[in-house]
Structure formats: C-alpha cells, structure tokens
Length: 81
Image (cartoon, rainbow, N blue to C red):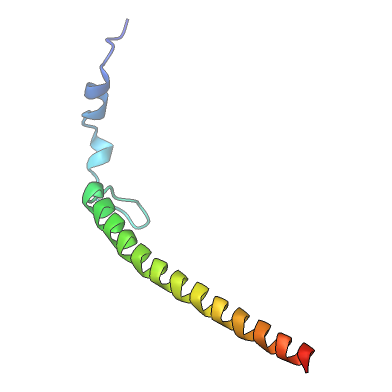
C-alpha cells in the first residue's frame, strides 16, 4: 500500500515538469500585495469623498427649496392678479 502524504508534503512536492521555463500564455503566480494597507487607503478615500457628498447634497437641497419658494411666490402673484 502507498504511503499517504500530508497536505504540506503535497504542496512542497518537487516535480521535474514544474521546473521548465515559463511558456507564452502560461499564468505565473505573483505574490499578492498587502490587501490591508490597500483597504485602509480605500476607506480613507471613501470617507474623504463622503464629506464632499454631504456638502453637495446640502447645497442641492438649499437650491431646490429656494427655487420652490420662488416658483410658489410667482404662482401666488399670477393667481391674485
């Protein structure tokens, strides 16, 4: 009966066919960048954008209220004349 290998032994196995040079179209494994630092930077960017969104939203609401007030005054003046 064959000897059972552990997962670590299977991952670290050395085969002759894996030592060949990379061929065109073959995907090479590259180390992934530090995801936590990237996520922290992304959160900071989102928080910075949220403050600008709040001020823009406030300005839009203020403009809509002013336009509604002016329109209602014009309608009242038109109906009374």
